[in-house]
Length: 293
Image 1 (tube, rainbow, N blue to C red):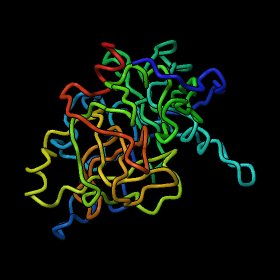
Image 2: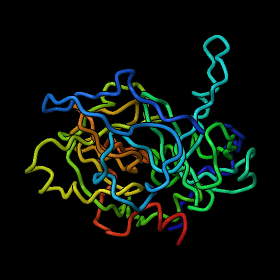
Image 3: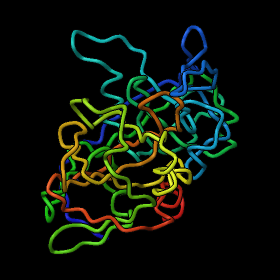
């Protein structure tokens, strides 16, 4: 739908990241919620066979990031961090152009952010992934931070390109927005990320350790790029439980075996007073939004 926004007042700015190397804890092990020491691929790097639209839960992996993971390694200047700027200013759906290496000139899209490791994830077609290398630089046209909806001031968008926002399955009503999502998830299942002071970077995780909850909320069908609703969740100043609030986000990274962790959700809008009504749309995924609008 066409939304009246302040997009003409937003800054469009270049931010740059380098493709990070995959990382693991020094021992290689993670301790699962069942107390087992296990070894899995994890965050960072170029992941060839995990992209938006693919399952986020069926991998032998822990917190794996789909597509390409970016980080800006430039040192901070005082309290100012280039990597913080990359993580806050890059928005889901922003175009990302390879500016060094064999794939120079190829274009992809930002698909999510991962807190803790502070990565930005970008999707590219398979033939581009094959040509990329760790250390290649990618420039993002960062656009969207500060976005506001003039007709729905109680709904706060964040981390989303204004042009992509208008392609989402959204319906306007007098009392708020109806937003199409693949899953409707209660805040009681949310874990890692709670306590963060800002939802303008990073994510928070859906816990999947209760088998009944996994069945009831179809969590085993989550895909990278799925647009989901978290009920009784307010992300205005970091993620908190608030009865009646609704937060909409995108599945940014895979499941985890670690207690309190799971598929990560990067916030794209929140309504502390419940001015968002989610409805189920099985096609509400970034793959459709970005490549088949």
